[in-house]
Length: 415
Image (cartoon, rainbow, N blue to C red; front, side, top):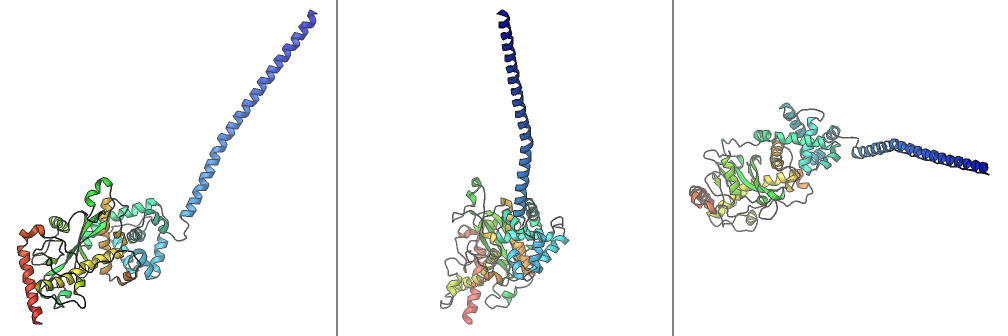
């Protein structure tokens, strides 16, 4: 009996030991499978991630740079195509574009690298002509953002040099033909060398710096003084003054920083400026708007009205010049995405290109047929209270204006 019990106990112990071994073996198998699965996932996930990333990158590059013609090829196609294409894209004729690119290369202002000078010029002009963002430039020229930042920065760096070369005061040895050949203006304005006017250009700026740039209309702008000769060239430009600044204040600043008038000469200005010997303004409180002198309106009744009328005809040249500038370069009608100092340089850049185009007899009539939603330039000059605070300093200017006006009136009565 005892022997049988021992046999049974031994068998039970063997069974328990066998079961324990099987359980341990199964646990080892399970752990090994888990480890194998983990190793497989560690191998598979990087492969899937790389495959997905490569595939996504390939699709983006295909969509972003799908044009057959890009960069210099695109520019060359426009230059070799219809002249209107170049005017619309770069606001000038192909021969002027090529001449300007050659000048920049010859003067070592820009250099040919991976991006040629012609393409750099095209990028900058396209930005000015269409207020193009970097996304717009990518679509047009099929290059990276970094390329456009670099090209535009190169141009902003040379704007001061170009300003000194192309925005120069006129050298006047004799009356301008527009004056000399018209009895309405000669000899009264024989010493006049141009006209001055101010205009406002929208600006974008940080909110904590915006207050001084808020103008009378409640929008943000900077006040720009433009000096023009009677060939419609810009001879001087003062940019960057806050929109709240008056025209007279901008002119005083310009005189303090180098703007001069040759002895015996003068400029015509509107009523926003003080009347002086060197800056001849119209009579305030007297008819001046050009539309008031249209068909069916009465003749001048006195020397002040006559002077104001002829002053307006001459002063209108700078108004016309501002209109051409803003129509050729619509970027001047909007606030841009550039830094503040570069927004100021944009004004100078448009004036530089305007003078270059005019010097090479670029066409301007095509601008009249351009579709735009811009405010047209007024056919009159506003007369704010520009000389209220300068009465004590205007005696010589008033005497000079009266002398011219009286001579003009006497000759007018005898005609």
